[in-house]
Length: 397
Ligand SMILES: Nc1nc2c(c(=O)[nH]1)N[C@H]1C(S)=C(S)[C@@H](COP(=O)(O)O)O[C@H]1N2
Ligand SMILES: [Mo]
Image (cartoon, rainbow, N blue to C red; front, top):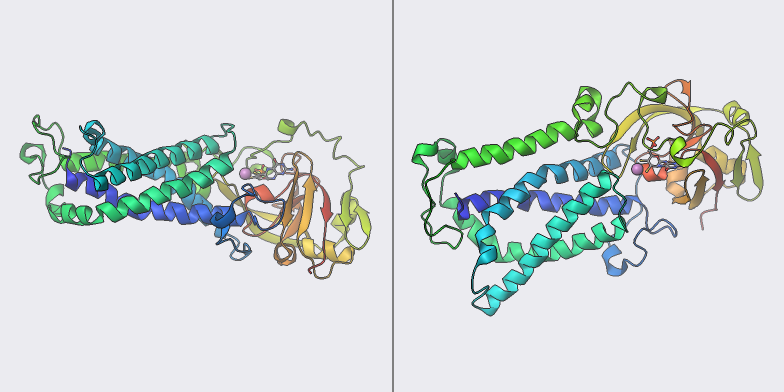
C-alpha cells in the first residue's frame, strides 16, 4: 500500500496540524509571562523569546482553548505520525543513503523532522502523564524549535511532490475502491515496493484505521477539557475524569496530602500577608468581611485538562489597594506547597482576578486550596496558587 499518494495524505494532515501545535505551544509559553523575572522556565531563551508579549486576561477561556487544543490535537496526531513514518519506512534502509548533496541535505533535515516529532510527542505525553522528567520545559521548548527547522526544510523540499502525488489519484474514488480493486500506485517512486505482494487492506481501509484511531483518541481525551457528559469518557485523559467525586464536587489535581499540608497548617492562626507600601496581615474572617466578587472562571492546566467553576472571593486589586498599591505592577504570590509565581499588573487589576475563599457557594475544601486560592482569568493553572500565604505588590513603574 505504500506510495506517494498515501504518504501525501498523511503529510497534508500534518502540514495543517503541526503548525497549529507550534503556535499553541508558543502561546503556552507566552502564557507563563516569562518576561516577568522569576517566571521563565527557559530563562536563556535569547532570540527564541523574541515574540513574547504580556499575556492577556480576556477572554477568560483563552488559555483553556489554546492549551486544550495543544494537548488534545497533539494526541490525536499521534496515529497520523505513526502512519506516515510507517509509509516511508523502506527509505530508512535505502542504499546508498544518498546520491547527491541535495539528497544528503534532505536526509539531514529528515533526522530533525523524525527525531524532532518523536521527541516532542514523547516528552509531551510523558509530561501530561505526570512522569517526572528532567527539564520538560527546556526540552519540549528547544526541541520544538529544532523540529520546526527540520519541518520547514522538509516542507520546502517536498511540497511539490506532495501536491503532485495528491493530484495523481482522486480521494473520492479511493474511498469507493475496495480490496479487490486495490493496486499499487503506478507512479515511479522509491516509496513503492519493487515486488509488491497482494494487498491485504485497501487504501480506504488504512485511512479508516488511522482516522478511526485518531477519532477514538479524540473521544477518549477531549472530555477532560470540554467537560460535561464527555468528561466521563476521557479515559485517556490524565486528570479530571469523574465530575462528582472529590471535595467541592469537582476533582483535584494536586491534593493537600501530596504536599503534607494538613488542616493545622491552615487553621485559625493562618494569615495572608500583604506587602505594599506597608505590611498587613489578614485572617480568613477579615477577608470574608470584605466586599466579595463572584465569577465563573476556568482552571486550565498545562497538561491539557480544564474545568470551569463559580468562584467567590476578594478582587486582587482590592487587596493591592489595602496596602497602598493603587496602580499595581508585577506582584509575587507565595503559597504552601509551591515556590512562588509573578503576576503582571494587568492580571492583578483584571476585574475577575480573585483571591477565592469559596467555590460554588461552599467554603473551599483543603484540597482546593483552603483558606484561599488565587484565580486569574486566562492564566495557566500553574499560576493559580492554592493555600496562599503572601502577596508582595509592587507599584507600576
Ligand atoms: N500551592 C499550590 N498551588 C497550586 C499547585 C500546587 O502544586 N501548589 N498546582 C497548580 C497547578 S499546576 C494547577 S493545574 C492548579 C490545579 O488546581 P487543583 O489542584 O485545585 O486541581 O493548581 C495550581 N495551584
Ligand atoms: Mo497544572
